[in-house]
Structure formats: C-alpha cells, structure tokens
Length: 413
Image 1: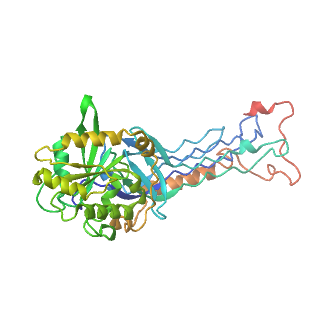
Image 2 (image 1 turned 180 degrees about the vertical axis):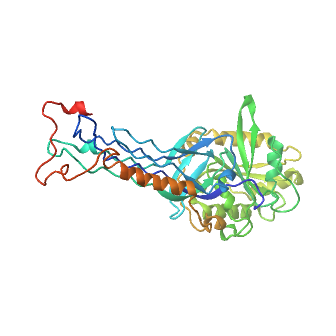
Image 3 (image 1 turned 90 degrees about the vertical axis):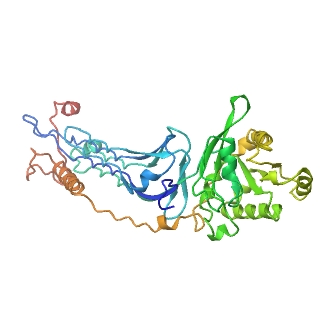
C-alpha cells in the first residue's frame, strides 16, 4: 500500500488563526488636546474550513500537507481602525470524509456532498479597542481586550467511499469479476488472493436509465479483526452502503459457515453493519447444475435473500440487479441509511504508521518576523505615535480626564 495513490486515512495538524489585539490608542491632534480613546478592534483569526469536492477520490494531497495553519488577525489601531481579519484556509476533501480527534479518537464531523463547507476550527475573535470601555466615569480607559488565542488540534481524516452496494467476501470469491461484468470498471483480476488492494467503484446500469453505485473492497479472511491478511482497514468503505452483498463461491466447502465468518468479522469492526440490508450471492454457479443448486439452497439461511450467479456466463445477473434495486429503494432501508453513527477510533480502526507520525514544525523566518511585528504593533497602539505621556497627563486616583464642556463627545470620534 505504500506505493498506492489511494490514501483513505491521514493525520494532520490544524491551527486556526489567533485574534488581533484591540488598540489602546488615544486621539491627539492640534487644537484637540485630549481627544479621548479611539483604539480600534482587532481582526478575527482565520478559520480552518473543510469543503467537499466530488472530483477528488483520495486524501493523497493531504498526505504531503501535514500542517495547515490559518492567518492571524491584525491588531487594531488609532482612529477606530479595525485590524484586518486573518486569512481563512479552505481544505478540499473527497465526499465521504469523516473527521476524528487524533488524541481521543472522538468523532467530530463529516463532509458528504459536493460544495459542503464545514468549519472545523474557528478563528479567535479580535479584542475590543479601548473606545468600547469609555464612560462618564472612565474617560481614559488605558486597556483593551487581547485577541482570543488560536485553536490547535491534531485530527485524522478517514475516507469512506460513497456507494449503494458494498461487496463483502473472501479473497478470490469473484467480487472484482462481478464488478467488471455489471459496470464499466476494470479492476485487476487474477487467480491469486488479495488481487484487489484498494477499493474500486463501478456504476451499474439498470432498467429505465436508472443506475446505482457498487463498491468492491479487498477480501477479508477469518481473523481479520486480529490483523490477519489486510485486516479490517478497508471495511470503513462499506459503512455508508445501503446494501451489503455477501459473495461466497459455489465450490466452497461450507457456504453457510463462510457467510457466518464474514458476518462475525464485520461485527468485530462495527456492530452497526449488521443492521444493514444483506443479500447473499453464490458466485461461480456455472460449476453447478440445477440439481446441485437445489441441494445447496437447502443449506443456506432461510432469512437471507440469495441469488446464484456467474459473472462469466451472465447467469443470474439480471435477477441480482432486481434484488439489489429493491433493497436499495426499500423505504425502511433508505430512511435508516443516512443515520450513520460513526464508531470512535480505537486500536482496531487506526492505521499505526499514521498514528505514530510526529509533527515536527519549525517556524519560518517570515512567521517569526510576523510575530515580532504583532508585538510591536500592540505596543505602539497603546498611546499612538504622536501622544506622549507625561506627569500632567496622568489623572489622579480620584479623577478622570475631562473633555471640553462645549464639545459633544461624538465630535471627537
């Protein structure tokens, strides 16, 4: 998987922008000896926003973009000049991306359709300038609010492919062959296990110009929940599917036993998968005659719809499409499918190499200079460049500055 371009799990560090500090500036001009406070508000920090993009199918761009930082808000200045807001950062992700807290594994949010925007981290609010705090008893407020700090969080983005039908089966059960027979997808097909190393999607045509999406995932084996084979890593891609199509080959020793093994592995991954509509397809049925099919049908679970198919000869394909379409359009199934309760990340659902990734970030010279400039601007905004504080300007403990009686306060603004 190291050389694959299909990346469905990535860990990144995000930080929103901090809010700019409010200004403590006092107005001073010729013939206006004590103009009063006029410090402006600081700008808000930039947001981190996730946006769905239907043209993306992998998280590969984010694998090489580990640090995503929004811009900081600028400090306010004199004359009630507000600071500039920090620049927002919009991160485009594939539809079906789920966000988890990297530290706790807690589910945070998800992006499911094209153009959807989710505010992942909110930028800090800018501080209020000192003109907000003036009053009849406090004519010279020498303080202003600092900006809110930035929010920094390590997150995990997990892609869950959006499809109507998900194929579940052991390696070499004929899943890729079926997908290539009913759609224009061309997955890799060979006579050795684990030919499919990444999920494949295909659009299946149905009657009256209707269609549905089918997803093929790598095969799972008994003990996959313990890490055997490819483990349960790719089962995340069938969590959104409306219908699960279990595929067991006709030459299996015990079809019902293999089905129960698959069902048990799904339960180990996410118990809610058992609530989905399930259909059993007996693949490679061209190896059986009608008499053998009747004998095999007697051993299958009675509460589970089943279809004998052969992707090579086309046997049962039309019947399978009919069964799948009825399951997809079933009212109860359609109402239940959108309400997915995403399980939290634990040891079974994490990708070890991503969790072990350590963020090492060294600020650039520009960022260091920007931080120093912010400190200088905050200091300069205290009184303004042309306002010198001396002993005569400092009020006594029991008095405040008085403006000229014949000038209304709004004339100073």
